[in-house]
Image (cartoon, rainbow, N blue to C red; front, side):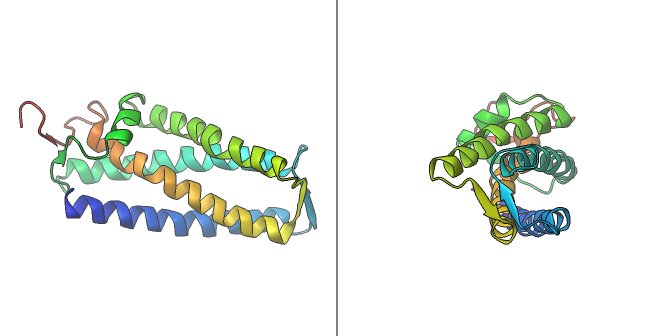
Length: 178
């Protein structure tokens, strides 16, 4: 794998974790400042908050990141990516819509199913029916940073692998015509 792409991806993932953890922690603190305990279920419960956070965080993160990465790819900042690299992510990206907002919407929905639903189920299975706000703030800060970091590679690599994501996609080493 090209060092520039590998280094870029690591930098993006780390920055995404830090920014989204701090931002989501701060937002949660501002919204929950007067409360002492949160229930897992209910209109203002942990489950609802995790579903909304997973969807909106990953939708917005993906939409913004795809736009920023498209500019970098179209300016030629990245060399050809070997066809065998990122094969799992490449297959996921292959089935995403061509338009950035459509792809971001799908990524937001996938994140809700892959991250929020299992987290809620796990909390219920281990018997956590409520958390103190301070414990929830720590949990949510780390959880939001983690799901943002895990979602980031899809958005960063989308412009490199999606043929209609921009006028001239990044070349793939080993594919016909290269």
